[in-house]
Image 1 (cartoon, rainbow, N blue to C red):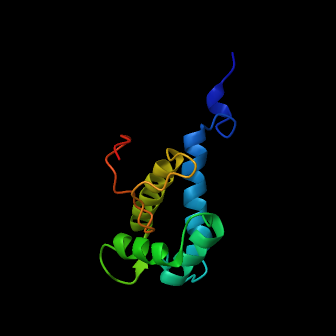
Image 2 (cartoon, one colour):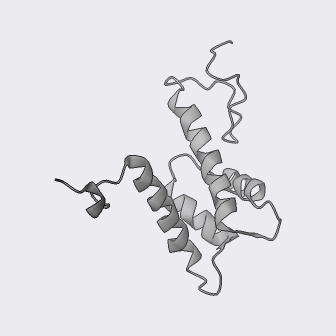
Image 3 (cartoon, one colour):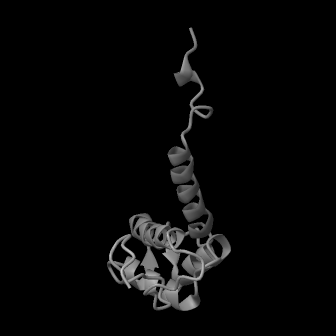
Length: 121
């Protein structure tokens, strides 16, 4: 009988791999200041520029940091970083539904101000 639980690395789902990747990327940048387990504003910016550069401007990154830094201490703990990931994922999802050449109601801040998936113009 095949015991799948003996080979957990073989059985990882895409979602498990994505979550593991997010955790590893967080630690890869947070460890640059080994005295804490936080992302500074610079570490955060570097992480996003090196890993999500196709559509993230400096202004957008600053806005993300400000929205995610819920306790306003100038750094992101892992739970705050998860807020960032959800915001980036939502924006990436919205972009995936845009037609080529469709500028919709995007005001350059990475946020579409439309109503769901409806195409009312």
